[in-house]
Image (tube, helix red, strand yellow):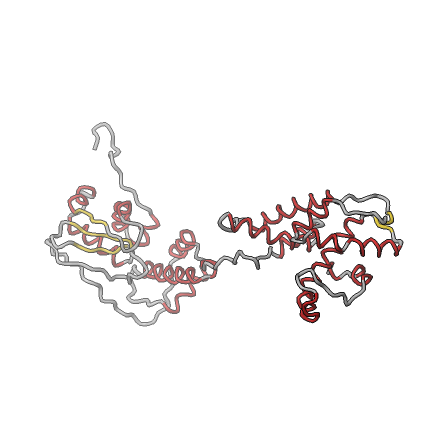
Length: 364
């Protein structure tokens, strides 16, 4: 102690609540050695008895050993004494360590640490203290109702002050076991990112509400998947990235199709704009396929004498619809017609052009 002050140079502190639960001496010793105890159950640290005697000069060696034994009985730590009695190994008590069970060996002071023999008391109406219930709620987030519900399968044992500590360990073990089994802790396999990948329902709803054609969205999906697979895998925010990608392409698409404010009739020399062919290229539809449909398209709408604000959009929808119909029925029709019309462009028409042009199933 310093000669100029009544306050010691080094102070030992303890928690009053902890002392009320496990005992004053036990609380002082536990908080003194706590920084040296590994925080992982099963990992050990050797405490040198001479150092403990120096840090706690008001206790004899056998008193320190007795307090370590009490902490082990309470299920707070696990201890293992060395054969020479000069060191004691300590570890954080885990769920696998039952209250009052620990390893020990004979040591020079004669305070042999033997496993406790549990004594069973007759059934009683014991209840955990409010301090233990508050401790479970504050330190571990375990509500009072859950803790009290574990009384039914709690082995009360002898009526002593270790009951609160044993009950706390009992509730903690059950709580942690249930937490590990909770679905929130289950790691689910991420969805496959391949040709069958589709954006989430929420992502589709956002894009459709923005005015993007669902068919246009589907034509961009293979390109998006291919791009990210070549980069090594999907991005973390795959749906958000896909929305941005579609919106950029849709802006180019909507800007490329010139809409007149006044409806007009189609002329005999009408030609689609170059942007139409670029959009069809992105959808995997060849320009030759589109050009082959131009004469009948122009003829039909010339004869109908109807007026529209955008013949580019009308032609784009018609070609996409024809392409899907060819993909669905083309191979079957080729087999029926024999080898007279080989190749993917060969087709038979079992419907009129008017049916194709007025068919709105593409928008469903």
